[in-house]
Image 1: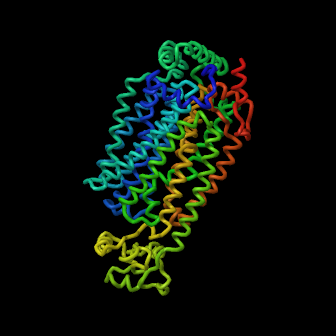
Image 2 (image 1 turned 90 degrees about the vertical axis):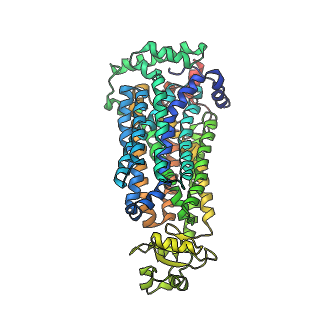
Image 3 (image 1 turned 120 degrees about the vertical axis):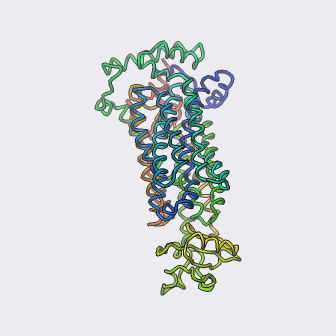
Length: 578
């Protein structure tokens, strides 16, 4: 049994994790060094949300084409799909450490290409390079941390990777805000990612390989040296013996420590059930809409009625900060409350939050300010052509104006109150400057609304509930629910499912909001969240405090796990008894 005998984790795991700072800093060094991959993951997925506002200003082709905007965002996700798929195989073949080093190289190259991009095509190429690194790091960092962590605090340490992901997203918003006035704006935003990539590259050269991977590859002595640094002296020999028995049992079952039979994998009950839970969690993590918030947060803020790019970035910083705070909450509760309970609480909150967002955006779009013929005629020769030729122009409101497309039009608010009737004008930089000179606000993404702050509250609630549960737990579960011989491959399959789902959501969000409206888009995410809640209740096991081999036994014995409120797990109790 890999992991040995462990006491209850209900109250002490978080304190145990903190005590490592002085008791065994080596474990923390491994966790945080590998976790820089999570920081890069978070930074590179978050930075584009703010950078896109300024890329649109520099490249008019991007500003005019919604599909091009979605491509710049989602090509990193497309790269991540390949990176995660290849990374699973590479993890088993070459080891966790080498894969992280390769990911750092890709991060660095991608950052340089993007920062120097002369046009949208080079930006997309750079995003693909970054995506390859993100895909590899997304499943390798938690895997490395999990295999280098004592079982009692494994959840808390793997949660540090989740914290660094959200911390990277928060850092990206800070960097975005810091460079809004700097020459080159978005080039600095995307280029800064090269520095932590270089730092992790150096650190990983100085760190060892995962001891479990080493043992699996027959390098027992090297594995023992590392495990003696990880575990207390009174536990290490038992841990080594348990790992030895685990690997020997696998070799006896499979006939070779090097061969992984895919058909056998799918026929193995524990692996199949683990994959059902792991892949399902990774897919639902994306389909409940989180990366619409992280990739398009400033755009959503503008859709809620906040016109300024800088204001949108500043308000989006709040959601990113809450996301990082939620990851800290996860570190505290993951080994105290348990994975499954945290997921259920998280999804209930997500459903409620998405309901609030759907309702707020419905009110925002159906109660936007009217277009005034007097206000519009104040601006000569720049009136929106569709408005001028409309037979029912008296019924036009701001939303009608923004939907005009021949050419695109924008709404210039009243100079006295943004909620009063304003002007519908041609949308270009010159007209925007003319509007601003009269102390008016210029809207092209969303309309002025008295409900805008409610949308921000809905976004905040969404992040507060999502981050501690659905934000962190899927990655933790996928680092611990597979047998050692299948862990890299299964982790790669689950991470690939995550990135494919991510790509679908990222590539379709703006198009969905244009086709059916923001309100209906969030309502769809809400319905999916209800389905995700049912999936978690039925198919996801509780793995709190269980050694990895006991998780395998549990999955062999049970398919459905309804009673998430019960304490303890039968396989665990049996292990304690023996």
